[in-house]
Length: 128
Figure 1 (cartoon, rainbow, N blue to C red):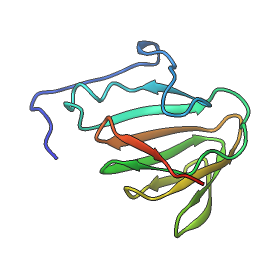
Figure 2: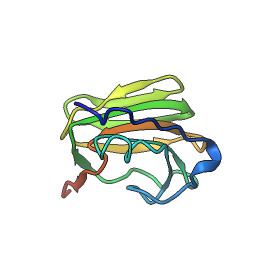
Figure 3: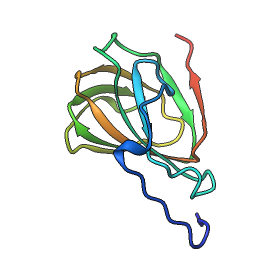
Figure 4: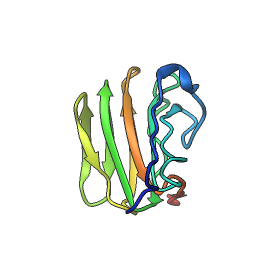
């Protein structure tokens, strides 16, 4: 993967607002990596909008790379072929492309950094 030469980017907490994103029960703060990488990467901070509404839908992502690092709190997520995994502060996960998964539960303070490639990708809900 090659990025544009001479590209530099920095963001500060006040540079972007918390917005809606892929999941309606989470808020997303973009970290400004999409433009400098020509859409090759997205990095954002994700936190809950409120209490966990219960297990989410079974789905997968059509992308090349996904990494999540837990800053605060915890979450339980089910992965196809792996089973249930509990993530806690300091946990780091590489999620292989196309793996079916479902968020089961998370704490009110669950906060992560997620990095994806490409920046924009499709999420597919798996019919029950």
